[in-house]
Image (cartoon, rainbow, N blue to C red):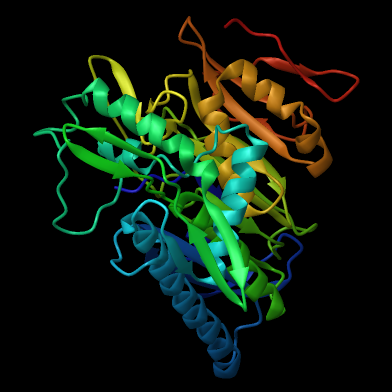
Length: 409
C-alpha cells in the first residue's frame, strides 16, 4: 500500500469523490470540483480543479486539462525514470565514465537544480546515491536486472561493508557532472570516477525521481494556472504538492494536514492519522520521512533515504521533514537533505540566510535518546495545530528569527 504523507482538505475531497462534484463553500457559494488521479513513477498523482463545471462544455474543458496533465506525466517518466530503458537518466547511468550524453532540456534543468541543491545543502542532498539506494533494496530497476551484490532476502540481510563504502565514495562524484548547451542541444558529461568491488567496475549512477516529481508539480501547476484555474491543487505521491486557492474557505486557504509518521492506522481514507495541520494557499510543499519505505532488522529501521556521507540509510534520529515555500522541486531536495543532516545541522540550516531569504517554513520531527518525538519548526506559534499528544514542540524562535532547540537530545 502507498502511504500518504500529506493531505489537502482531505475531508472535503472525500465528500467530493466523483470526477465532477457540486460543492458548497463556507460562505454558501456553490462551485464545482473536478478531480482526477493518475499512476506515475510507481505512485499516484492527484489533480483538483475548482470552478463552474456544470455544463457539458465546461466539463470538457476540465477533462481536456486532465488529459494534458496525463500526457505531461508520461513525458516526465520517459525522461527521469530509472526503469524506462531509453530515458535520459538510464542512458546517463549506462554511459561509460567520461562520456558525453545528450539529454533533454528538462533533464538539463533538473540536473542543474540538483547540482545547485547539492551545493546549498553542502552535499546532504545528493542525487548520485543510486547504487547505495539499490544496494539496500529501495531503488527501482528495469525488469529482469540483477546485480552482483543482490542478496537472497534484502529485508533480512544487510549488504557487505565493502559495497557500502565503495558506493558512498562513488556518490561523491555527483558534483563532478559537467553540463553544457550547444546550439540549443543539452549535454551531460559523466564523471571519470569509478570503483571496483569483487572484480566489477561501477561508475556514477543517478536517481532524479524525487526532485523530478517536485519539478513535475511545478510545471503542471504552471500549466494549470496558465489555463486560469488558480483555485486548484496538484499533488504527486502526496509528498510533493502545489496548493493554490480554494473556494471552500472564505480566504481561499486550503487545510494542509501532515500524516502522523508513527501512526498504526493503515486506512488511507481515515481522517484521524494526521499529527499537524495548518491553513495555507499559493504554496509549494514537500514532506520526506523514514516511514514511507523501510524495513527493520534487529530493531534498527532502514529506510530509503540514504546519508550521502555514510552510504547507508539515515540513522540521524530524524523521522520526518516538511518544507513549505520555494519551488516544489527545491522543497523535495531540501526535505531529503534535512533528513540526512540530523538535529544540529538541520537547525543550522533552518537558521541559515538562504532559508530566511526565501521565506521557507520548515518543520521536522526528531526522536531523541529517550525515545521522545520532538517537533522543531520555524513556523510561529499559533499558525499551526498539533493534533497528536505524542509530539512535543521542542523549540522557540528568538528575536532574530532563529530557531532555538529546547529539548533533550
